[in-house]
Length: 196
Image 1 (cartoon, rainbow, N blue to C red):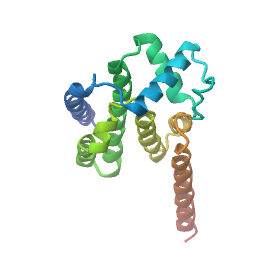
Image 2: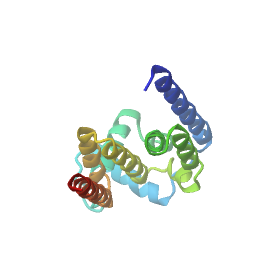
Image 3: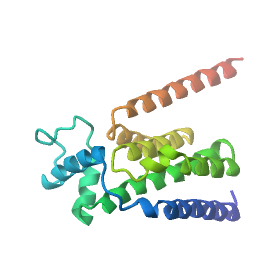
Image 4: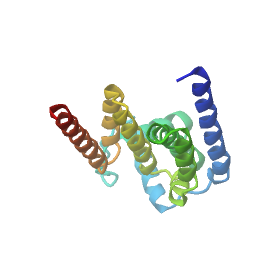
């Protein structure tokens, strides 16, 4: 890849991220809705307990700790306000767009990366979830990143991303199992080609 291509990729990514930022500005300071208010109270308890992920009843969420610990750290640094909570989720939505671009670029080419990112940005469910303070946006960002690292055979980043993914929400285990199944099938195919 030439320096010109790398620079062009960075410019395209920057334009996509700035566009999404401009689109999301009006929604950043909206009040919490009921699911968010539960997550906020659970994250606040984690912050009050100095990042202890084991919450006292009735706040025991029974979920992995990544969202609650990072959200609590965010609150300890910046304070608890709806705009702060929504910025937390927004950061993960930018990470999702970034890795969607990279994944599309890897699988289809530069145009595929741009189209995939733009389609994701304008998908109503993604747009609405990208500013809601729940574990869904970190889960989405880490899922796309983990798949990207796995397809790039970047084992160290895959293991780190995959581990954090599983520590975000329980359904993440399905992503890891799917990737392992894919790798197994690819290995079997390559062994058959070697034998033939």
